[in-house]
Amino acid sequence: MAKVLIIGAGGVGRVVTHKCAQASEVFPEICLASRTIEKCEKIASELDREITTARVDADNVEALVRLIYDFGPDVLINVALPYQDLNIMDACLETGVDYVDTANYEPPDEARFCYAWQWAYDMRFKEKGIMALLGSGFDPGVTNVFCAWALHKHLDTIETIDIIDCNTGDHGHPFATNFNPEINIREVSGRGKYYEAGKWIETDPLSVYDTYDFPEGIGERQIYLMYHEELESLVRHIPGIRRAKFWMTFSDSYLNHLKVLKNVGMTSIDPVLYEGRKIVPLKFLKALLPDPASLGPVTKGKTCIGCLISGKKGGADKTVYIYNTCDHQAAFAEVGAQAVSYTTGVPAMIGAMLMKTGKWHRPGVWNMEQFDPSPFMDALNRYGLPWNEKIL
Ligand code: NDP
Image 1: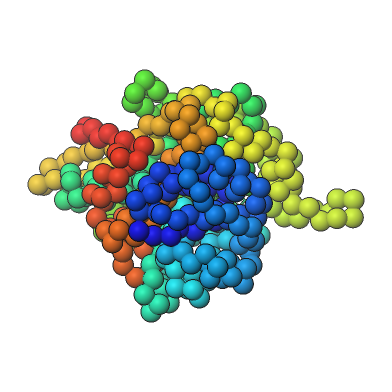
Image 2: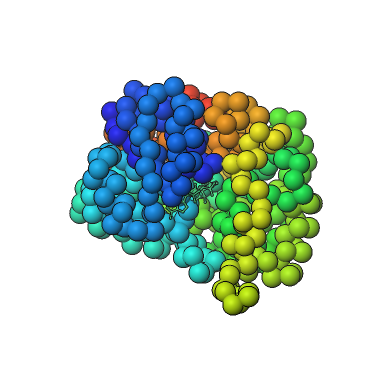
């Protein structure tokens, strides 16, 4: 039984709150806190059990510490933005509370993400006897667990990993992002990067593409190579990986809009002077784009995210594809959010649940592939993200 504090009342925060509320045997008390308390209250009003809500600015460590002492959580789930990760980890260290997130730290003024900043907390978390579980969303998150599962169940060694993220969702807008627009555009417009033969190789943004034939009626789609954070931890924690790549599908409309916006400077994070005031073009663009939470009622289609993993079993070559498909409308009917928020929020709740039921608890800072994947794979089936696997 654990008191859970959820920070961030966006699309993902909504799903985490609904899912923790469903698992009342594990989370008897919930507090949802965000910068805008009205968003917390709206989510709370839809639940069939009482939860606490609070206003907090997670850029302010003192305010976080006060909130933590007031509510007294056993675990904190951070689904605010990657900019807040280190502040929230600092507050957890000060108060001795376990920490879960779904995205690694990014400095606000630099479009760059990596685990180094958060891995550097490992000794301090160990000394305090608390745990941080990093990247407990879908990708990163479930994709890391799929790799651990492939090693546990199907392969003696992993040689290549292709993580393939497909979203067929149509929301009717010419251009919108299905999670926070600022974070999404920073990620997609960054340079591609993959790992091969002991080296990281960089590519121009979205310049490498291929096609993949997705299961469950989705069919063939174009996929684009991108850099994604789980590649860094998988290469570090799974010995013997020769090649690791991450791919994502995009609609033509999304790519055309992104190209034009980039060409005119609207995706830049460098401040410009406008009528005597400094503004960041990407932050201004975010203000114009639909709030991802508003896409829930109108998005139709599915996500299909999976890992194509090759290696050796008993000396022979073997390839396995492990994946989940999630329907946008079914997700909305259950928790009022589209599938991208759903597929992130469910694993965040499961990560916290496994920590608090002792199945995955170890002091220090950890990534998902470092634990026994079996209880996580079981929980995915129980809490709304059933998976499939194919031996190819
Ligand atoms: P949203 O923008 O919808 O929600 C973010 C929420 O965080 C907002 O409600 C916002 O509050 C709150 N917030 C932002 N800054 C602060 C702050 N300083 N203090 C308190 N609250 C704050 O984003 P999503 O829900 O789409 O994404 C949430 C997280 O999930 C992101 O980190 C994203 O990168 C990650 N993610 C991970 C995925 C995965 O598979 N691993 C996939 C998709 C997302 P307010 O509205 O009041 O400003």
